[in-house]
Length: 201
Image (cartoon, rainbow, N blue to C red):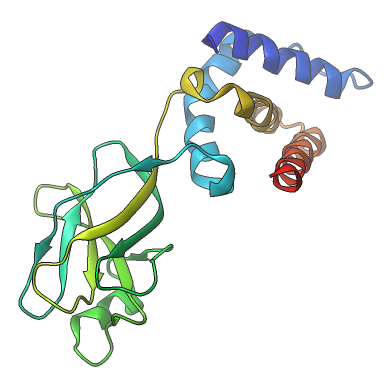
């Protein structure tokens, strides 16, 4: 949907929510300024089952001890799942490099295994994002499954997500304008729609 149409859709929902309340007029410029940051928040926080997903086959850099890593695509935002060819289960959540749990992966007896695999989100020396894996059965495994959420501009969101997205924008706009209760009401609309979407799938 075109950006200007998204802004108009947000205004429509603002009017719907605030029709019985006296609030200042919300300028289009404010909505426009928040669209991209709300899109990022939307893609990072919305349930993965409602979001468009990308499937990829990254190349692995393996080590003799069965650990290794692969670089993620430049548009990578959020993991859905990944699995190596000799793993039984997929990894759906990543540890963050530097945490205690992530540091434990550097030791043979406390790292992940084929039956309980672990992934760690880290950065290489050039600042590129990568996912470290623990542990494969061999030094050169392949990635059987890698599914992720990528960042897209609001105007490139699927049409079936615009309603959800607009309510998140409404909530953020009202929060910025310090209409806290109305912001919460808008977010509650977002949650209700997510639940309806879940029940319909």
